[in-house]
Amino acid sequence: MVLDASARSDNVLYIDYRSVHRITIASPLDEGTGRARVIRRKNGEQTMFDKWLSLEQQFKEGRLSRRQLLADSMKLGLSAAAAYAFVGAVENPSAVLSSAGVRGAKAAEGEKLDCVMITIQRAGDLGPVDAMVRGLNRGAEELNYNVRVVEALQGEYQGALEASAAEKPDLILGLFPPMADPLERAARQFPDIHFANLVGIVPEGVPNLKSVWHAGQDGTFLSGALAGMVSTEKLIGVESDVLGVVLAVENGEQHGYLAGYQQGFKTTNTKGTVIHNVIGGNSPFEDPVKAAQLAGVLKERGAGIIGTSGGKSQHGVLGAAARGGYIGLGMDNDQCLQYPDTCLASVLVFLDRWVYDVMKEVRTSSFEPGHHYVGLPDGALDICPFNEADHKLGSTLPKVIVDTIANLRSQVLSGAIKVSGTPEL
Image (cartoon, rainbow, N blue to C red; front, top):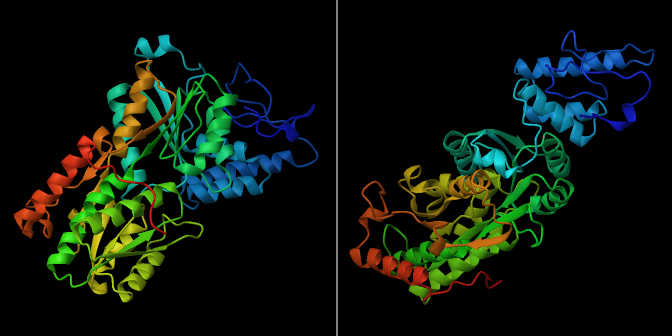
């Protein structure tokens, strides 16, 4: 793989093949040693080579994080694509992906396939990224894949995609809406690789590209309706007819969540009011401190229950609920189990299944390109079993409330209730 076109000349520096996972600047290996040649020149490439090896050593010793390694490699003059390739090589020096493109025969014969997941949010969020990584690992085990996760820095999404695509995996998964345009460009550039944007929207007509977006409003409609009944009946310490919602950003997904909260809450509390605010900033899904502050603002404005909109930020809202004096609504996973005293219910988004299903499509040569919009009727999401014994707050609610939510859920499933994804702003 060419690290940087500007580095090519008659006398070129080559990097140790085994050390950096097939990354060279221009030349094949020395057949006798299995190593690429390092050619000394008077203008300092040998020193640069030493710097690359130093970065690798610092990373392996734990003195550099992955993001620091990426940033420092770009400071040494590598392009974004080359830097991502270098980081991937340092992380996985022996994990050489297949050099063959996607072929139906390969999948049908049961050979090991290769999948790269590129996320713009960090793993360890106890939310959507962790869920999708679980699906990736399940696919690796059950569907016979090599898998790898890449955390892409803001502004470097295209570089991360191109570096990953150059290894010619069978499938590249890009997570969240900002990956949509880079994925479309990569899919057109690399037609033999399957690409999927999960929680995003890509255009129709690209045969190796798909996206999956969810009707999140189906889930927040149910949790909002539950909050409406609790506020109407003044249960579990809630004295207010105001539902607050902390959104991460202003986009279609987040607006859908807000719209569901609004419609559900007002369905069961006709006097109710829904207010919201927005985290924003550079890391809106990874800012629990600001989310907690905004929840406090909503509480001061009268909210007795505060809904969240996913990601790591929601843990700021839920974690501050006890001292803030409000009840929370979770997202993505069943947050009631982590916050038993303050979380009333959670919207479960089965993102792990989305990942597994796309991996299965590639494995079975049944990849379905284009955009796919899924909701409660498709099994893409649901409300948590809030009334079960291991849910401290929900299990105390009257049966009439549990039955009402079950009835509303049935109506959404049947199509009798169609929840709009457009909020009142």
